[in-house]
Length: 151
Image (tube, rainbow, N blue to C red; front, side, top):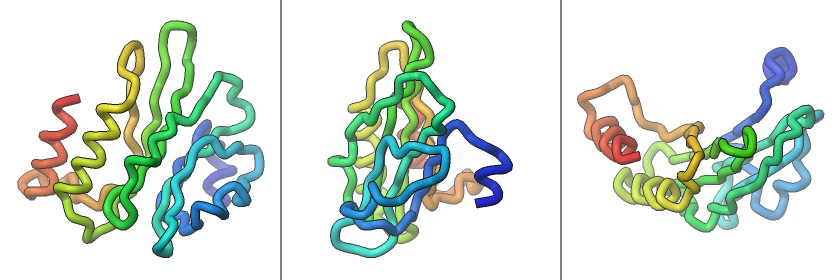
């Protein structure tokens, strides 16, 4: 909580929030508005939420991609922030549990990236994919890099 208020970020993306889908709307952060969320229905823990600071007046909307999520495999939510009339930014929040099947998880991520708007829109991916990205020789890192290189 202290970090949140000392850094005062424009957006907060939380993974592993642990809230069930029916409880997410009741979780509040002071000075922030919940824009988009995915919560598990069957299992505990997991999930992804995106909050926007109330000082941000740019139009921000959920991209409603949560249907791509697979519990315990790859969980996603996303918002689109209009920067100006010609440019927008998609913020994608991702959570992949540590022992989730890599290929299935990356297929979910690929499907999500394919579904996001691309015209005059940049995409920023944030979250916890549980891949040691600094181990460049690992199969997981190589496979993730190959996927992202296509975008």
